[in-house]
Length: 113
Image (cartoon, rainbow, N blue to C red):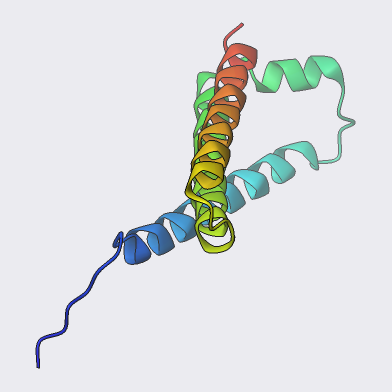
């Protein structure tokens, strides 16, 4: 018996993307928490010094990309599952993509300004 599989075939790739981006975000959060909770008070000069290092900027940008991708996969799946009207679903998906792109662009502007 041959099995015919139809659909978008997102399953495994998206499942893996969700897990990888979640791990990246957890690692970043733990490193940032360790840096900030070492006993010294968090002040603006200390915060600014932390983000003058290129590695921290790149790590933060990787976090932002991971967060955007993670959010996109989740939002897209929710929209595909619950919004049955094609036009409305497409509109919401485009709006979500534009919003996430704007957030990542804003992050880049903040980090390298």
